[in-house]
Image (cartoon, rainbow, N blue to C red; front, side, top):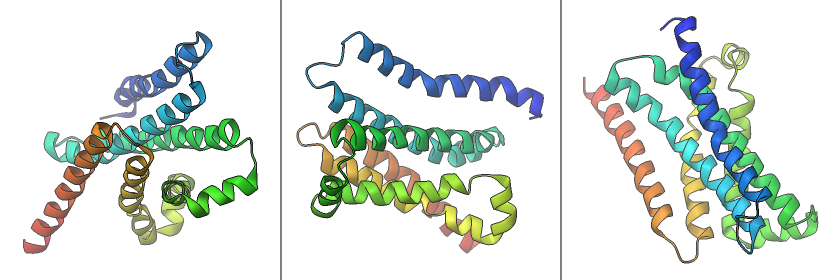
Length: 197
C-alpha cells in the first residue's frame, strides 16, 4: 500500500480514535456522567486506553490473517493513541482525584496494589512511546525490538490494574483478560511453530 493509499485509512483511524474523547467532553459539558463525573471520566479514559492497547496488539494477527501489511502500518498510531488516553487517565487521577497531593499519591502507590501496577504499566508505556519513532529504531537496533516486547507484560499489568480496580462489575475485566490471553496465546503458538520449522 503506497503512502497515498495509506492516507485515507490513517485519517479515518485517527478520527475514530478521537471519538471517545469527543463523546466524553460532550457528556461532561451536558451533565450526563451521573453523580460522580470525576470517577466516570477517570475510568472511561483508562478503559479506552486499555481497549486501544489490545487493538494495537491485534494488528500482528490481523496482518497474518489478511496477508496484508497495512495493519502493521497502523500499529504505531494506535499504540500512541492508547498511551494518550492512558496519560489522560493518569492525569485525571493526579489532578481531579488527588489534586496533585504528592504525599497522598505516594501513599496510594505504596499501599494500594492496583495503583502500584497501574503506575508500573504507565512507566513501561512511557518508555515505549518515547522510543516509537524511527530514530530510536535506528539507534537501538536489535535492542529496540527487545524493548518493545515489554508491551506484553505491560498489557498484563494494565489488565490486572483493571481487575483490582473493579469491585462489582467483573464482566469487562474478564473480557479484556480473555482477549489478552488469546492474543498472547496466538503469539506463543506462532513462536512455537517457528522454532519447530
